[in-house]
Amino acid sequence: MPSELETAMESLIVVFHRYAAREGNANTLSRRELRELMENELSNFLKSQKDPFTVDKIMRDLDTNRDGEVSFEEFVSLVVGLSIACEQCYQLHLKKLGARK
Image (cartoon, rainbow, N blue to C red; front, side):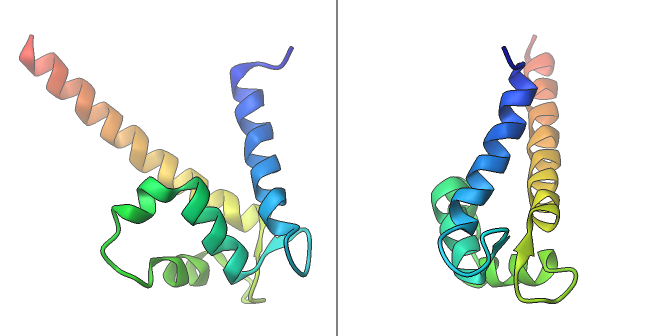
């Protein structure tokens, strides 16, 4: 039976490929596929952004080899960055809870 972390890793891979397979190269995300992934899988993050060009900016940042598509390796950097930001918020939350006691 896979561990919780192994299940999370598998989920990340499956979600990436579910969107990547929608058009063109099944191993990369086009701009449209990335937008759909973010709108459906990271909707809370997108709602918190004020800039309507957020996905375009993220695409530019992720596409390190400038081929117009985002590979799994490039995509993982988005997940890592968001995970770090979420963990920092979690730590602030814990500090606030500790200050209340």
